Amino acid sequence: MSMPNLADRLRSVRKRRGFTQRELAAASGVSLSLIRKIEQAEREDTRLETLRKLAKALEVSTSDLIVAPEAADATSDVWVPVRDALLRKADGPLEAPTVAGVTGAVGAAEPLFTDNKYAQLGAALPPLIRDAEALGGAGRPVRSRVLHLAGLLMIATRQFDAAEIALRRAYDDAPGRLEQAAVTNSRCWLLMRRGDLAGTLNLAARAADDIEPRISRATSEELAAWGGMLLRVSTAASRNNEPGEAEDALRFAHAAAVAIKDELAPVSDPLRTFGPIAVATRRVENYMVEDRPDRVLALSERIPKSGFRARASSRNRHRLDVAKANVQLKRYADAFEILQEVRSVSPEWLGNQRMARDVLGKIVRSRRSLTPEMRDLAEFIHLAY
Image 1: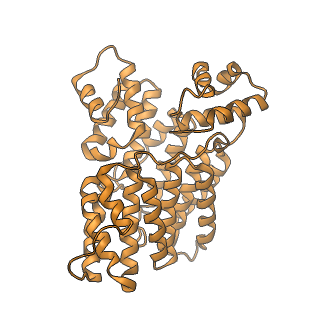
Image 2: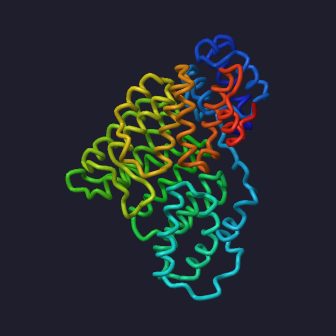
Image 3: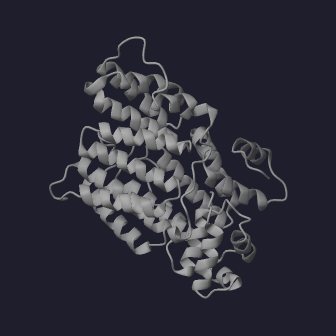
């Protein structure tokens, strides 16, 4: 990720804390050569994981070291039709749409996102957005669903500016507070992918406070909305080197999940599920952020294999965490098997994951020669080796 002021920030914080570069390397586990390259501005793609290690050693938050990066690949031709529709550049529909017709169409399109079929969804969205726009005031609820769906696709494919436009308009059209909470949850994901940890944490914490229900009286929908927002708080806090806040948020999310009992895809946010499995996988993710691969593998063994939506991004992300833990413990064959598994069910999703390239890169570097399957996967995810 691009960190315009990272070199100056790291150098300044390191000196204020009284560390030499060598001492910081020893305290953080980050190599001395990498620290030198960062401070000399020779590395513009420093990973968030590395920054968290440095921040932890320096006893600052991760966000103290970084500036939110600009959107990557913001002009990709593949997504121009979607962006043009969001900017109202395209012509309107030839025939007047109906609320029922657009509602049916968005219901058919949503599983394309759940199944990570981004190209198909990208082709379906422009006319769907135009139809939703043409509905006027009566179409606000379904237009919010369409725009939210577009925002999710744009986040997943790193079209961040377009995602911001879509989510802002989806929020304005949302028919109720739970639908607004669902859009806010997606805005937290957007901020996270842009590297704005402090912004993510602040937005998620405020939203969680706003929608916090009384558990004894809350509906499952209310609990799912609140619990889902708490998971965003936990994720951001963990990455921002605030483990206490991350654990507190997980504890409250667990209480909400226990009250729900099973995984729930609420009507107000049908593309996400929340429940005990969602909380457990987020805990695994936090363990991975905290460099505790043994805990990742131990907990992942206790998570049911069923309960996820088929090909859901949440399960894929969980499986990448497990693959990464295996690599750290030098269980390379197990890690590669997981990458192949994820590819078999969600190829487009895997191709958009930097973590997959990192994991495979470590597998490749551990070997003297590559199998045909490894070469094929490396080519598929555009790994330079």
